[in-house]
Image 1 (tube, rainbow, N blue to C red):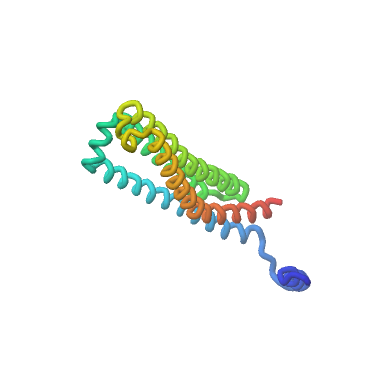
Image 2: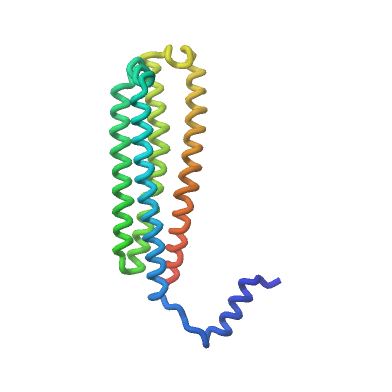
Length: 204
């Protein structure tokens, strides 16, 4: 059984001679506009996420019981270093997303647009992996510091129980974040990749 799409293609070819052709010059502006819009949304979402994590850290840092826990477990210095690294990295990626958006917005050729799309895809992937690894590594280091400084704080002193709880908690949190990033950024990257493939066809 012949696929409906193939039938349409065959019918289109029959009528092709009498119909106006859409040129690459006409397609490019549409792809450029769509790509620019997608990267703009990536930039906006990154800003929202940046503000969200600042709010979370602010709320967490101002809870009296959390302050006491951080001091008693020797995490004060590490927590400060962690916040500096986190904010610096997030600010860096927000800046990169903005620059990617401006570059795509100012692009005037299909070849350069393809290059900028690839750059944006890489930046998003690096951003996702940084966040996941940062959370995992930071949690492990924090666990080791608490273990050395104040082991009685770990699930009543049971190191194995505390370790199991940490691994389970990190697996759940990282899993949720991964699915969130995959869903949110994945949809945008899929659309961006579709534009890339269309541009690739134009370059052939």
